[in-house]
Length: 281
Image 1 (cartoon, rainbow, N blue to C red):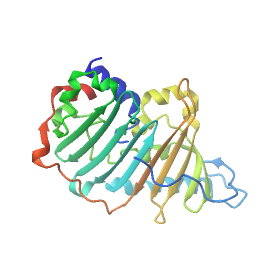
Image 2 (tube, rainbow, N blue to C red):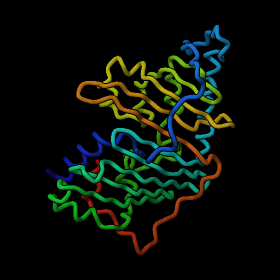
Image 3 (cartoon, one colour):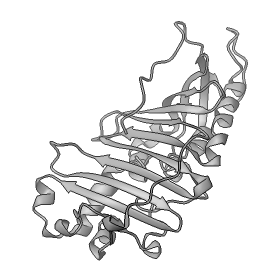
């Protein structure tokens, strides 16, 4: 197996998103009696629950603060996790990504730092498959590898677009809400059409295609903080083909209070070898 084939199998299959961490506390919804599900078009609920259109608008509005680019986030699902921060005021971002665990035949950890115009990545590949590939030794350096921006342009695994600062694309996802109900103070549930989720970055195109028609009615739950800002969004993906049902969970916190990313010390930096670009391209 070459490094290029390794990258295609590992990154395309396992990375749900360009920035995938252990999540914040549980996903339960408030309220002992669920409100009836209603269309996102705005039909009033006979039980006195908020009008559906209001509920959807609340979720659409909840993503606006994300565009200011000053927050922390986590994202987890399908054996992959990520956590990080975005700090638009300093044009910096940082994220730590893990794919697979100690018992995996192949596992990957990435520590990625962006401080415009530079980017660095520290990579760790472990497991029997990694041990069998001599080229991996050139990548497991234990140092940050400085990235050539021309070679990672458009690469959602290594690059970062400061014009689109949300790694999970929640604003795009909430646009796809098809049904929604309030389940308590700051809590919502319903269904969402994820056919545009590849554009958002939350799911890869292959996963969406495997869902077929189910992709148009994926169950979700969401929470907003006391200021109405999105704090949690959970997608419950149904089983599809050989893929078991899975949960994709994203959280947001520290709005307006994130700090600038830290550039790696010069003594811990080397230029990235060609093998690194081959792994991700």
